[in-house]
Length: 128
Image (cartoon, rainbow, N blue to C red; front, side, top):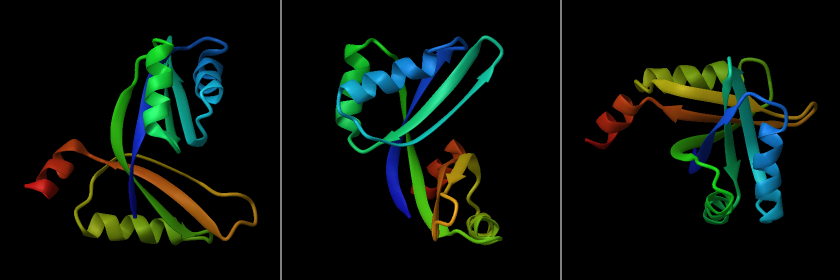
């Protein structure tokens, strides 16, 4: 399990909102490793994991794009039926309460990657 950071950007739900973020990062030569986004009514959220978070934050700051940084965990699992359920059962057995999760792989790929954040109260308890 690898610890990393995720940048979350609140956006207006309009054409080009996500493009502005990824263009800003691309122009700064920041490689995006994962991206998730959704909208709810007039607003939305875009979450990105990047190779170089320092460079990404500078690019977003320079473009005056507000973001929040969130610690997340990344885990590689086998790309086969039931593998994600087994991993999540193991986390639940340890008392880990997830506040967010997404996962992806490629067709025919041997590995998948799941990205998740632990609920704030659980994270505090783990460090107490």
